[in-house]
Amino acid sequence: MSKNINVGVIGGGLMGREVASAFGRWFAINDSKVNPSLYAVADLNKEALEWFNSVPTCKLLTDNYQEILDSPEIDVVYVAVPHNMHEQIYIDVLNSGKDLLAEKPFGIDLGSAERIFETIKSSGQFVRCSSEFPFFPGAQRVYEVAKSGEIGRILEVRSGFHHGSDLDPDKAANWKRQSKTCGEIGVMGDLGMHVCHVPFRLGFEPRSVYAQLQKGYPDRPGGACDTWDNAMLHAWIDVDGAEPVPMRLEMKRMAPGETDTWFIEVLGTDGGARFSTKEPRTLWKFSRGKEQEWRRVDLGFDTPFKTITGGIFEPGFPDVLMQMWAAFFAEREGDLNECFGCVTPDEALLSHRLFAAAIQSQQLNQVIEIT
Ligand SMILES: NC(=O)c1ccc[n+]([C@@H]2O[C@H](COP(=O)([O-])OP(=O)(O)OC[C@H]3O[C@@H](n4cnc5c(N)ncnc54)[C@H](O)[C@@H]3O)[C@@H](O)[C@H]2O)c1
Image 1: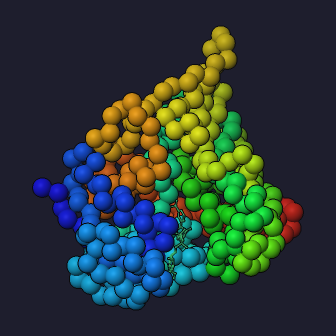
Image 2: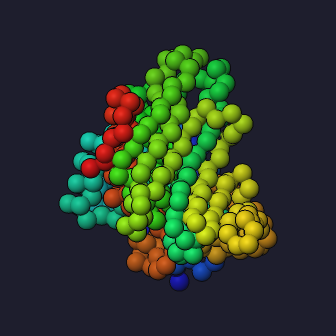
C-alpha cells in the first residue's frame, strides 16, 4: 500500500501546471511507496487558478496562500513564484510546519537564501530545491563515471544550460528579465541551480570565480529589461587534494541555435563522459587507450526510478520532472538509498555564494575568492 501525500502548490504558472501533470500520471512509476495528489493551488491570477479546475484531485483553489498553510490535509508545499516572493513564502511555509519543495534560485539573493537557510535549521522541516535535469539517465551516468575514479586525474569540468529565445528582440519582457523580480543575479538565478547541482554533488566546490556576464536587449515589448542574460563562470575547484581543476559553468538566455539545452562534461587523464539533452538517450564516453576514443552509448529510458515506459524509449522534460519528485518523496520517507537526491539547502546556499562572487567579479574584473 502506498502512502497518500497531499501537496499544495503556491504559484500555479508554468511550473505549477507541470506538477499537476507529473502527479496525474504517477501510476507510471513502478512500485512507488507514495501516492502524491495535487490537493490545493494558490495563485493571485484568476486565469492561472481556473486552469486547475481540470485536475480532479484539486479540492482548494485560492488567491490566499495562507489557506494552504492552514489546511491540516496538506503535507507538502511546492512554491513556484517569482524570485522576489521566495523568501517570504518559503519562511511562511516552514513556520506553518509543512515540508517544502522550493523552486530555484532559493531566494532572490545571498542574504535572502541565508535567512531561508536559518529558518530551515530552526524549523526542522524537510526541504529540497528543484533541479530536474540531472535525473536524465545520461546525466546520472556522467555523475557515476565522474565519481568512480575510473577516469584518472580530473582535468576539466564543464556544465551548462543554454536557451536562445532572448535572441528575438520582439520577445516580450517578463519578470525574469527584471532585477527587482528576478534578482540582480539574472540568468544565474534563472538557470544556475540546474548547472551547479551535479558538480556540487560531486564535491566540486568552487574556491574562486572569474565571471563574464553579458546583458541582452535593454528594451522589449512590455518593458525595460536589466538582468544579466548570459553568464560564463570560470571557477577553480579542488578535487581529491590534487592540483586545482578548472570548472566552467555556462548559463545563457542568448545562445544561438539553442532552445533548452542542458549539458555536463567531466574529463580526466584516462577517461571522461559527456551528456546533453540535445541527445536525450545518448551518453558519450571517452577512454584513453592505444587510440583516443569517444564511444556513443545508447542508454534508452534507464531512469533512476523505474517506470512502465519501455527501456528503449527517449526520456524528456516531464519524465525527469517526475523523477525529481520521486527522489524528493523517497528522501522525505528516508528511503532514497543510493539514488541521486534533489538539491539540498546547503547546495542552494553555496550556489548563491558563487553567484554573489560572480557579480563582484564582473564589477571589479577580478578573480574573487569564495569564502
Ligand atoms: N525547475 C524548472 O525547470 C523551472 C522552470 C521555470 C521556472 N522555474 C522557477 O519556478 C518559479 C516560478 O517560475 P514560473 O516560470 O512557473 O513562473 P510563472 O510566471 O509562469 O508563474 C508564477 C506564478 O506565481 C503566481 N504568483 C505570484 N505571486 C504570488 C503569490 N503571492 N501567491 C500566489 N501566487 C503568486 C503568479 O500569478 C504566476 O501564476 C521561479 O522560481 C522559477 O525560477 C523552474
